Image 1 (cartoon, rainbow, N blue to C red):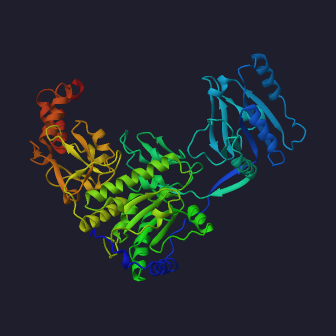
Image 2: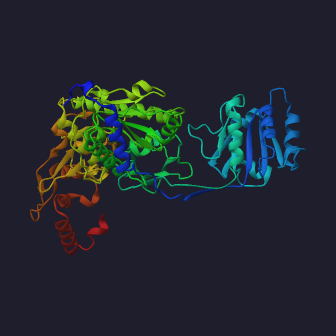
Length: 584
């Protein structure tokens, strides 16, 4: 099915008409999440930077409508301790604005030591700024302007105090020597006054989450890829839970694509609807006479910029508009190929956060490795550089793998991905080998040491997916690799260290089948003959309790009894010797 395309047979005008028919017939699902996260900013601003830059910024911000303006500057080595102390005392008692300023202006000069222990947290309307040198922290907003928080921060430092790839709303960073961006940044500060609403983009289903179980930590993929640091692990009484701060979250979406179980998803539209729309678009394109479709995943902002510049992609390129590229990962790209796209291209854009760029590169690597393992050309998935018009409009070199739509009738994210991989396996020639995947990929199996395993099934209770299960009538441990997300919770939960993870994608049908990792004959109760455990479990318990006074002598036989016979034996002993329990 990896046939070379006949370039002469493609009609660009016909493809462009088919693309337009798709757009008119089927709309891409838009974000319909209501705006239910609200920021309140009264305009109390903090400016951080050198004295010269902060003074110039303060002058530029006069008349901008700010309620107050606080300058936090770094003293030079030539400043004496006396002048620093005098400046601090003066600023703490000052609430008057210099001539020409419409808002109160306060100055505070930091010493180098203070700069090292300065910390900032929060978001628009609630920035906590404090010095903390190991003693009682000093709240600068309370000390300087008699408020608990600053509403917004303009950071002119060479290294921002709050160093995040995506700063929280209300935290504006600026290199004062950058004249081109200076006016834009200063204007944005003046606009951050009032009440602002945004959607609560994501929802977390803790029942599906593979982050923690029984006090052990497993999957951390969402924590690793969020450029806004909006995701945290919250320690509960027994285990940790993933939480998303809606005030820090900026809708990048990489967490949804990185999550292997679907525990984190967009509220609206959900991932399943996006995948269904991909298949519907390709079917409609074919029905309208289109050939060799290439899907290009692009942000809405980039798409609008191209339209403003008069750029029209080639007729065979169907743009998939996303709020951010992280909203689609390799599972959706492979869905497109399994539904009849000839190629998938991901259009990079300027100023992408470093973690988003790294995430997309990793996802492309995973997609290409999976394609290779299943017998397809890895070049069917490509990451396009910014402004590369030639690569954007290039004709695909291979025909689509299929002209049949793909039905994803499973609600679970992993189950849908398995359907996609199975379709790609049918359309290709799987290698039959285990392929090394990029580090952290959610593909792999486990190895179970049968000599060490006691079939306690602690691993089964910790597994967040159906990958591990217990046997039926015969005590056993069963495993299906297609469901394993390599979270490592089973490996950590095993008290006998009998489980080892085996990373990598297994390109055979064995991946889809459930097989027995370990099984034993059941141990039958010596009292009634009912099977209630395994021989290794009983032997292990007897060894651990051999010196316990409760099981001394003939009482050790109780460990070879089922729960019912054990209770009966205890009561018989108490009838014969009522003081027996007091002797333990």
